[in-house]
Image 1 (spheres, rainbow, N blue to C red):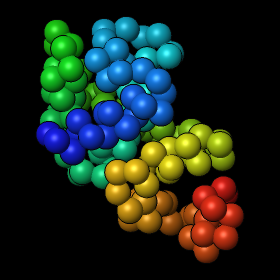
Image 2 (image 1 turned 30 degrees about the vertical axis):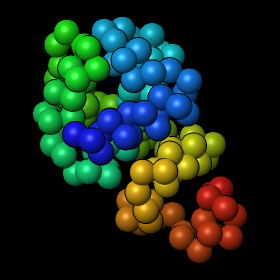
Image 3 (image 1 turned 120 degrees about the vertical axis):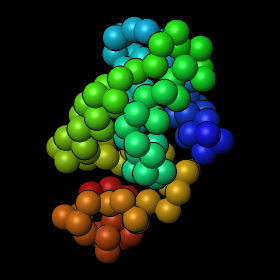
Length: 122
């Protein structure tokens, strides 16, 4: 769980919101986006199951864990946004570099040489 707390803290720093806030029981966009990015990065960098990631929210004071469906939905939303929005992709990949070597999770359709030359801007 230390790896998950590390990821949660990095996301919190990036968005200026402590993990205890973005794991709250709310659907406000200011909290859902960092929570979705957390679930995406945590899933991609740890390989933990959706259920295990869903249970993690309780460690930050959430009264009940998210369902595994919430985590799956979050991961799919972030994957979709990464495919469409270059700025969002860059932001997420920068966060990943703070937690792990990001080359292991870049989708095959992204040219690694282009990423290296442009400093991550695709």
